[in-house]
Structure formats: structure tokens, C-alpha cells
Image (spheres, rainbow, N blue to C red):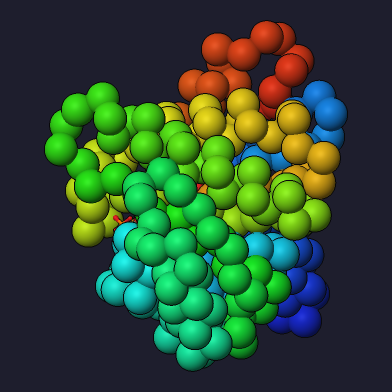
Length: 220
Ligand code: ADP
């Protein structure tokens, strides 16, 4: 910025920051729907209509993203979870339920239970089911935008590169049939997870029909 006055330099920097996309990468589909990857970022701050919680079967809260969502959202979410468990029992891996979002910026929380990784085929099907069921329940509630964390890749030990491929493929396949869900966002807590998801998204676009999915890289 040599030769610019400090005020001009500040404006130029501001314009540059404004012009920078806030996503790490994005897939845009022919029908205008989008799948965005963000990170490092905290899902409790998300302004999508719904966020997804990587819950455990008890639905009574836990560590990781589950703990963060209940802390930030306040006790009303847990009260609703208790009512659900009283009615239907504990939630098996791959299933999803929905509550309101208490004090969170989002309006709803979709709670889904990821599989604990043991290295076999059952976990892949259960993980895909988490994404499919979460998108399905959101669509049933007329929700247009939904944010996911990286389900099962924390305490549940799923290798991130395997989980990322399943997560993105399932979301890409589930979105076209949705009447309401238009935007899906993956909110990835750490840079390494975000990078792995970006690579998986790029691979999906490379393997798709020409012009059916456009891959855009944002900030790195
Ligand atoms: P699981 O039990 O399904 O593995 P975890 O909560 O342990 O769930 O981890 C899932 C992913 O969520 C991990 O990548 C973890 O780093 C991430 N995570 C933890 N806290 C947050 C948060 N506040 N926002 C987004 N992702 C988070």
C-alpha cells in the first residue's frame, strides 16, 4: 500500500475484507441450491434456520459440540430432549429428532446420533443416515437453511477423510428432492477438518456430470 494515505489504505483493506468470501469452499448446484463449507468456525454462532447437534443416544447432553450447543442454547433444549426420550426412548445411531433452539441464533436444533467408529460397514450406513434423516426432518419442518458439524469425528473416532466423503455425498444426494432445504452448510471446528472437507467437496465436483455442480474455493 506504499504511497496511499493511512485513511485510503484502511478503506482499501476494508474493501478487500468485504470482498473476501466467508466460506472455505462452496458447491453450487444447477438448481441454485448451495452446499457451503466454513471453518474454523463454531456452530453455536450459526444463523442458519437450524443447526444439527452431534448428540448421543441419551439426548441428555455431553461433550464436544453437544455440550457447546446446550451451554449456549440454555436449559429449554434439554427439557425438550427429555420429553422426547420419555416418549420414544433413547435415540439409535442414524436417527434424528428436532427441538427449538433456546437462546441460540438458529430457530431449531436437529439432534442426530452418529455411530461410534469401529472400522466396519455398519458405521458408514449409520453416518449417511444421520445426514439424510437430519435433512429430511428439516425439510418436513419447512426449514430452508441447515448447518452441520462433522458428525462422529470427535469423541466417536470416525476418520475425518472417510466421514467427509460420506457426509458430503449424502447431503449432495439428499438436497435435490427437498421442497424447502436450499442451503446446507458444514461448520468445521478446526482447520485440518475443514481442509479435508474442502478436498472431499472438490472430488465430488470433479466426479459429477459437467456443469451440474460448480466448486468454488473461498478463503483458505
Ligand atoms: P461425536 O461424538 O459425534 O464425535 P464431537 O462433538 O466429539 O461429536 O465432535 C464432532 C466434531 O464437532 C469434531 O470435529 C469437533 O471438533 C467438532 N466440534 C466441537 N465443538 C464444536 C462447535 N462448537 N462447533 C462446531 N464443531 C464443533
